[in-house]
Image: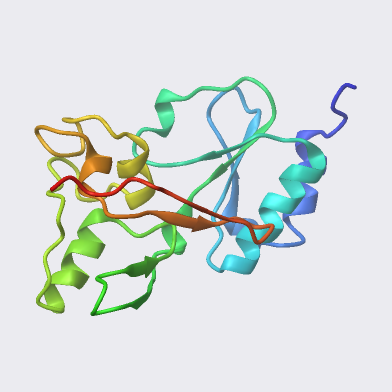
Length: 172
């Protein structure tokens, strides 16, 4: 079955959820739309629109230019979802939104007299999801080792309510 959604139709559907200034075109052959949700409900609606239209969704981070796509797509700019929601002092668990940066998390932890267990070498503006999506050493992370070996647990709540979580335990 061939997709029938057009760029104009997708933009029209998105304008029901977001104000126009938070929707803009991409530079990769004009076949993408960048969306900037600021509330979790907006993000859920954006994902639902893309799912119903069978349009791929890519996150937009510091390395977004590395991924070029020629078909109609959405790019999520999560910068507006940058809140630290809660923390548990006994377990060290911190719940954050998708746009939290490494620097933002490190600064917040520092204000609580805690340390961020992974040193961010490179750009402080990198978002936590992007940092964890590149698990190899170097670049935006530790000089040696695997990033996920330095993280106790990671979980995400998907728009459909399903929770996914890592099962990696830290190395001792």
